Image 1: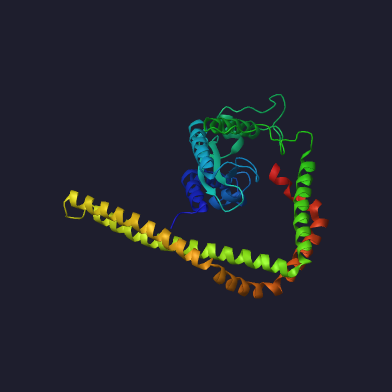
Image 2: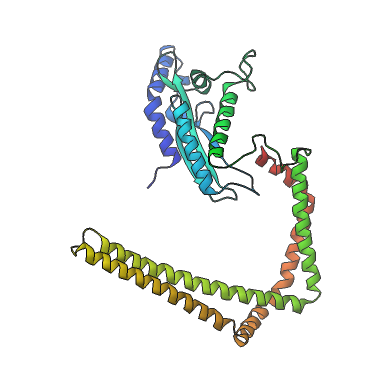
Amino acid sequence: MAATFSDVERQFYETHYTAFIEGQNGRNAKIRHTERNRSIPDLLSSRKTCPEETIYQLGTLDEHASAEDLLNIVTEFIEEFKAKFGEHVHVLDWALHLDESTPHIHERHVFDCENKYGEVAPQQEKALEALGFDLPDPDKPLSRRNNRKITFDAACRKMLFEVAKRHGLDLEEEAEYGNRKYLEKQDFILAKQKEQLAAQQSKLDELTLKVNDMETLIDEVSAAAYDKAVEVVTDVVRTETRKEDMRMIEDTKKWVLSPERKAPQATREYAAHRLDTVLDKFLKTMQTTAARLQEKLLKPEVRQKGKEQVKEKARDSVLQLLNRLQAEQAQRNPSALSTAEKSENRFQ
C-alpha cells in the first residue's frame, strides 16, 4: 500500500529533527522546564513548524490549463525549486487532483536550518534568511506584513510563470477578475452570480411555457430519452465488448512475444502479426454489429413502441420536476449575495 502524505512527512521529521527534539528536551530538563518538551507529532501539528502546503492551479474555473500541461509545468518548477532552495526548503510530497472542477496540485514542503546549537530545526524565517532572502522593506522591522516569506513567495511565483512561458502558456502576472479592470472583485463576483441566475431563469421560463402543452412536452422528452438510451446502449455494447476482447488479444500477444517462450523469434513475431490482423478484423466487425443494432432500435415501429413505454413512465414525473425547479429557483434568489461572498476566496 502506498505511503500517505502523513506517513512521508512523519518519516522525514523523525529522520531530520529527532536530534533537535532530543537536544531541546535535554536543555529543558537542565533548567527544570520539561513542560516545554516537544515530540515529532508536536512539530507536525504546530503552526510554526508544520509542513506548508501550496496549491498550484493555472487558470480559473471557466478557463484553465489542461491536467497534462499543469503536471508538466509544476514538475519542472519543482525541480528548479529543489535546485535553488533545496538546501533549506524540502519538498516532502505532492499530488495532482482531478476530482474537482479545475485540475490542481497540492504540494507540501518544510523550511529548516541549523540553530545555535548546530541542530537542524524547522524554522521558516531563519531558513529563508540563510537562503539570502531580504525583508520586503529592509528599513522596517520583521512583522506579519514585512517578512521574508513574502519575498520568497514572489520569487516562486515569478519562477513558475517563467516555466509556464517555456511551455507556451502566457499567464496574467497581475490577477484581473474576468479581464474587467474597472470592476472591483466583489462587483465581478456579483455580476457572475447575476449571469448564472439569468440563465437559470431563462431555462425555467422555457420549461414553464412548454408545460402549457403537456402532451407535447412529454412526447419531446420521451423521444429524446429513447434516442439517448439507444445511443448509450449501443456505446456500452461496443465499448465493453471491445475492452474485454482487446484485452484478451493483447494479453495473448504479450505471452507470445515474451522472452520465456521457446519458439523461434520469427515464429513468435509472425504469430503476433496474425493476432494484430485478428484484432483489426474484430474491430471492424464490432463496428458493423453496433451499427446494425442501432439501426434496428431506431426503426420507426420499434422506436414508437419504445417511446410510448418511456412516455407512460415520464407523464407522472414532469410536474414534479417543474415544481422542484421552481422551488430551487425561489431559494436561489434571496441567497445570491451570500453565495457571492462565499465564492470570494476562489479569487484570492
